[in-house]
Image (cartoon, rainbow, N blue to C red; front, side):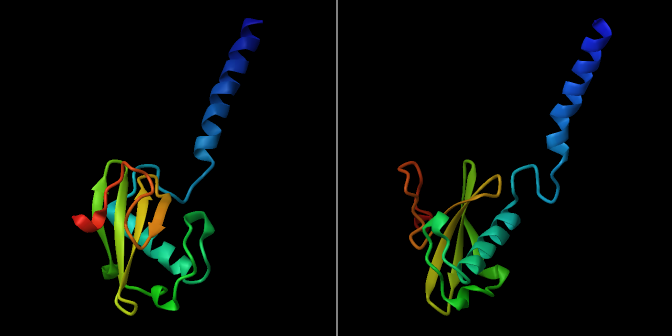
Length: 125
């Protein structure tokens, strides 16, 4: 009986680590500032091809599709997130994208203001 318990415990321990090892191709730590700007540019590119309802972002003009890396800059490095401002000179507009440290896009809008009262306006920096 004791041997059976040891074997079951060993199996449980192994199974606990399988999900953690089963996914590759992404970072496990907080995203870097460079990665945050890349994610923001990818979001603008995606929105230029179709609306992003999850972000309440309409389809953007095709001029957002091929903006250079220099068009994106971090305007706020907050606690747990980055606000990235993407300037599009062709439209004289700026898109603000809030990237969480896990790489998830939380908010994207033209005001740079979060819908929660705790967020600040990056434009005021």
